[in-house]
Image (cartoon, rainbow, N blue to C red; front, side, top):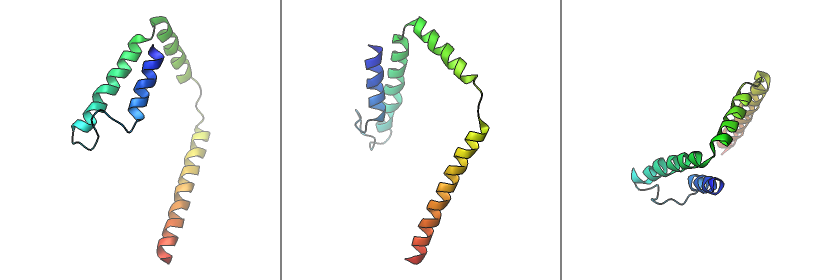
Length: 97
């Protein structure tokens, strides 16, 4: 039951179809701000306590794993390089037009 509800909440969160369309001022986003957190809260409450404790232990173990700062720096450098190349191509095409 919790799996199905979790999938429905996730599908609603990423779906472009809402109960109240987003172009309606304030109310359009209000349904997302209420329905999604309440759905997540309900899913968390439906997960058995023992299973939730196991998930929390697993998450705590993962957070204590070593972090590779070199790998993070490489990924950041690749993204910066890709953005710079994209801007360079864009400005060259804009200058030639």
